[in-house]
Image: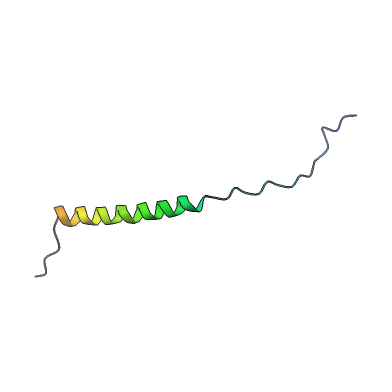
Length: 51
């Protein structure tokens, strides 16, 4: 008997949960990069001068 042609109803696999630590690490790295870029800007360009 050939039952290759039969649709098998299977429960779909649940989507993999992302690691919440990875999100936290990326946020912290983003904030650190933002501060580093701001520091470099003010170190090399200088603060705006009020006239």
